[in-house]
Image (cartoon, rainbow, N blue to C red; front, side):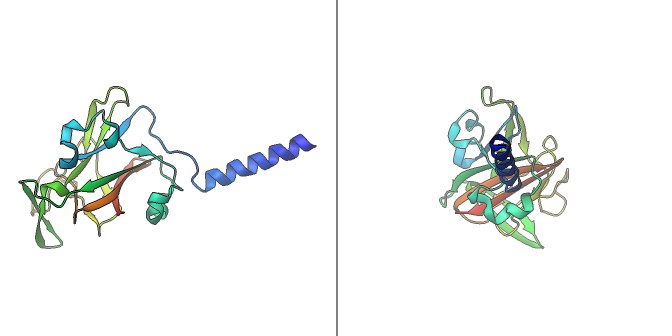
Length: 187
């Protein structure tokens, strides 16, 4: 009887942990990197400081997005500092009818690689290869529309997402079913 009680307590604890998002949500066989000027773009691959960390839904770093990420199949986060100094290049996007100019140091991409060992890029997201990235934090970042051509200055599917201002952020990447999501939480 004592063994059954211990088993039931362990089973309830396992269900509670799972229900609270306690399991690491990793996309097995792949690695994800955040890159941009801050990482030397293609120089980021294979470097642990730019590799995103697979996390559980209950990770405190993403608490403000937890309800938007329920049901995630994979979930990653990385801390990134976007510098305030000038990169020497800019990007212009028309957002809600207003043209805005962003320094190149504020742009970024999420990159999926074959594995932690090889780090061969499969896609740079968002792009036609990655599919559309849904924006989890439209008040913090801009993700260009998933269109082949930049029709109205808003950008297109190969253009870089951008944070609105310099600073340190948790960049979040998730997949829920076939949908992909990106966001940034200012630290």
